[in-house]
Length: 121
Image 1: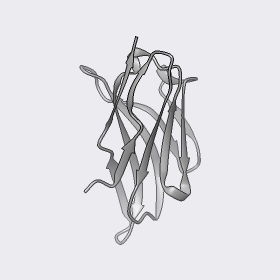
Image 2: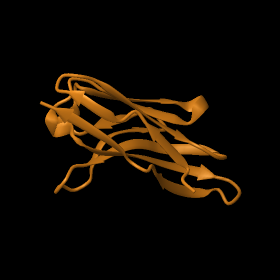
Image 3: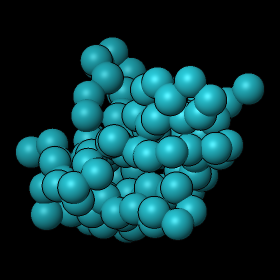
């Protein structure tokens, strides 16, 4: 069973906006990193944005100034606000969460099922 549930993908016109959400379920002791990756047809999967436990953020150069990553610690949820979308943003977006979970308290590396984002010109 998946531990991450993604939502928010869809079809938008160039210049539009979308907001992706990813909620981590189950018992979590702490979260190290929450991030978003994407993979377009014929291309490698790439990191889009990430936020660490210290609230440090990191963005791909291609999305800086347009995308914003944020998290809700109480709900173990990460968001990706995508503005000024371009056709080249079209891809499957995957949520990634690295967390410490009981009962063994080791690090779990979880991936969402992926959500399609399509930007038309």
